[in-house]
Amino acid sequence: MGVVERLGCGAIDLMADQVAIDALGAAPTGEPVERYTLRNARGLSAEIMTYGATLMALRTPDRAGNLENIVLGFETLAPYLAGTPYFGAIVGRYANRIAGARFELDGRVYGLAANDGRNHLHGGLRGFDKAVWRAAAIGDDGVRLAYVSADGEEGYPGELSVEVIYRLSADTLSIDYNARTTAPTHVNLTHHSYFNLSGEALRNIGGHELSIDAGRFCAVDEELIPVAAPRDVADTPFDFRQARSIGAEIDADDAQVRAGGGYDHTFVLNKPAGTLAGAAVLRDPESGRVMEVRTTEPGLQFYSGNNLDGSLGDGRGAFVKRSALCLEPQHFPNSPNRPDFPSTLLRPGDEHRSRTEFVFGVS
Image 1 (tube, rainbow, N blue to C red):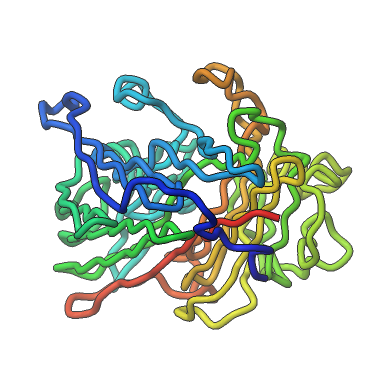
Image 2: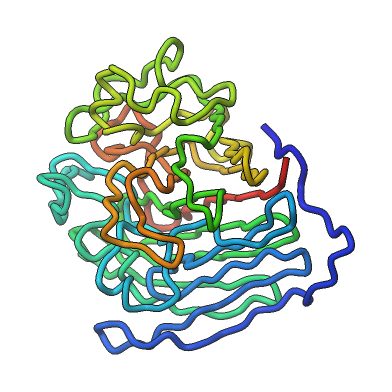
C-alpha cells in the first residue's frame, strides 16, 4: 500500500528545515497559546498550536508543485475557542465512543462525561482537544507537546502524563504518542485532522480514491456503538481493499451506511497491533496528491465528513457536508466495555506508545 511517487527534491531551492514560533493569544484559562510552524526544503509545512496540540494547516505540493493546505482549519485561535468538530486536534483521554459513558475497572464503575447523547465521545466535555499543552521545539524538524490529565478529569481514574511529538521529514508528518498513569485507566489517543487533498479547490471528497488494508469493520448501532463482532467487508460498501472512489457507495441502501450517514466506522487493520505498517492510501486524481497512512494502531476510523454543515469555513469557502474526511488510527470504540476487543487498559509502570505517519507524494 505504498505512495505512488514520494516527493523528491527536484530543482527546488527552498529554505532549510526550521521551526518558527509565534503567539496566537490566550485560552479562556488565561494560558498563552503558541503556534509552531515546521518547514522543510522540499516545500512541506505544518502548523501546530498548543491549544489542543492541534494541526492548524498542512501544506503539500500537487503534481505541478503548487503548495496548498490539505486540512480544514483556521489561521487564528478564536474559531477554535468558539468550537470546532475537533479540527486537527489530538483527542483523548479516549478517542471515539464509550457506551453509556461508563466502564468497570477492577471491580469499580467509573462514570464519564456524557457529551454524545448518553455516551462519551473523544474524552468528554473538556477533552485533550481543549487543553493547552506545554511545548518545545525539537531540533529543526519537530515539536514536543506535553499535558498532564488530572486524576478524575472527565471521570477517568489516574493522573495521566501524555507526550505527543510531531516531526516533519522530507515527505512525512509523523506523530508519536507516549502516556503513563498513576492508577489503572483506559487510554486511546488519535489525531483528528479533516483531509481534502484537492487543497484550495476543496472539492467534495466523493471523488477521492481510497484503499484501506482491512478485511473487517466494526458494525454499529444507531448511536454508532459497535455491535457484535466485526464483520467481513466483502460484498459491502465497506470493501476498500482495492482503491476505489469514496463516492461510489457512500449513499448506498445499506443499514450500516444509513447508521453513519455515510462512513463513520472503525476498520480492523490486517496487521498485528503494535507493528508500524500501511493502513490506507488516499488519492485525489485531479491534483495528483497522494497520502499514505501508516500506524501501529489496530484500527482506523474512516469518517466521511457527513456532519459538516457549512456553518464553518475559511478563504476556500464553507466547510459543507463531505468537504473533508478523517482517517484516525486508533483502538476500537467502546473497548473498555468489550473484552473481545484489543485492550486499551494502561496500568502504573506500563507505558502507552503508538506512532502514526502521514506520507505524501504525487501520482
